[in-house]
Image 1 (cartoon, one colour):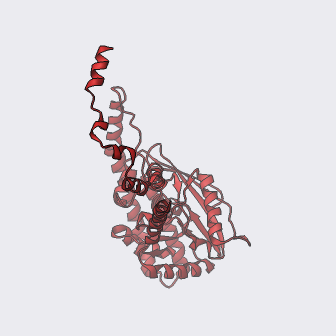
Image 2 (image 1 turned 60 degrees about the vertical axis):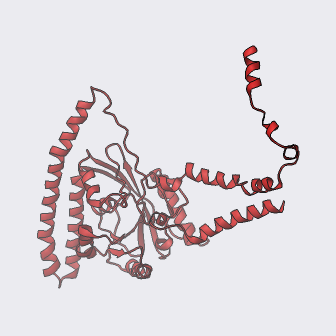
Image 3 (image 1 turned 135 degrees about the vertical axis):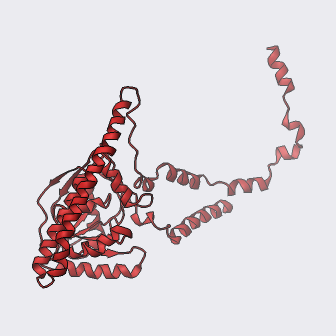
Amino acid sequence: MALSSEVDLERLNIEDYLSSDSIQEPSKKLQLRKDLLDIAPTLTEAAGAIVDDSFTRCFKSNPPEPWNWNVYLFPLWCMGVVFRYGILFPLRVAILAVGWIIFFAAFLPVHFLASGHSKWRRYIERALVEMICGFFVTSWTGVVKYHGPRPSMRPHQVFVANHTSMIDFIILEQMSAFAVIMQKHPGWVGFIQTHILESVGCIWFNRTEAKDREIVARKLRQHVQGADTNPLLIFPEGTCVNNQYTVMFKKGAFELGCAVCPVAIKYNKIFVDAFWNSKKQSFTKHLVRLMTSWAVVCDVWYLEPQYLRPDETSIEFAERIRDMIAARAGLKKVPWDGYLKYFRPSSKLTERKQQIFAESVLQQLKQ
């Protein structure tokens, strides 16, 4: 008790240093600042966006949990690394090289010498593209299970699928030759796009060019009308997502006035995460990562064709197809446009947020 009393006596009393006016009458200027700084709703919204950032989560690759954490498992992990990089990887590179040799030995003569027989030329080139895609899947030790009927060549239909990596196209192409709508890439991928995949009717675009969208839209309508064209494949998300979420579908594929055939793709991450983050990793490094893993395990579901309902808009139609794919592949839907991954948010959205905050401050001043 005595010690407590001594401590109380030694404490400074702030009231001894303030005038009686400042204690009895709070400053009006201080009250005004308090009102202006009353931004709790805005801070709450900002904190909530940071904590629940569902957009960024769509493009994150979750690293595998380490399992070589003790003296018993670490030697097994080291043996696995040596086997995958020292034996499996060279063997898979050799398999892929043999595939390319066979492909070019057959593709080049057909492409340049059989120009007068367009029907047979398209048939052989389509078979060769399916073959080289099969070699790619073999080079990853791909274990792919297909569910549902195999796609057929019919007019007035388009296939739409969720998008995780460029290997989505390879996995679907080995089963049936599709004409895909894809972003134009540089390097050796661009060479394959220009000189090989155009033979099966693929269409390329640059997402930064507004005029490309009009050209692609016109080519899409022409393609779906053809009776002998390859099935059209579109990834309406417009970007690669990490196979846990699905972002908004672009409505272009749902305005063609034809049957829409949903395709759901789900990867098993037990051996490797197939997600390709093109902003952090080149496609070559992505392929090397797949080829140095144990296997790529995947399920593909070809779902029932769907048609636009009389009372349905193209946006509602796209959402209905997205619901089907998300339910079948076990994906979480998020209300985001995948193009935000490449572009800054619109200035209109920023100005709207600023206007809301300004209105809240003015309301506080009027009180």
